[in-house]
Image 1 (cartoon, rainbow, N blue to C red):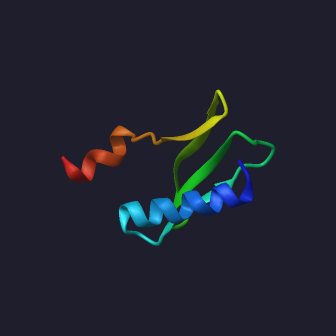
Image 2: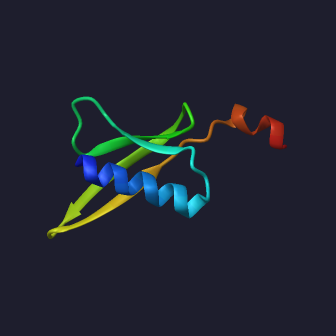
Length: 72
């Protein structure tokens, strides 16, 4: 992903979720994905998908069962 794409994805997530703490950061030695943070907490990976010249982005976030204990 380009620096410009990362900036746009950061703005998109901030606007979509109404939270200025979202940040998309480049991954070392990776061009096809970036890390997503909420504040300083890593929450997932944004993957770039290219198909027939069209680009899309897939956000993958794992939720551990221990993270849900306070919500049960």
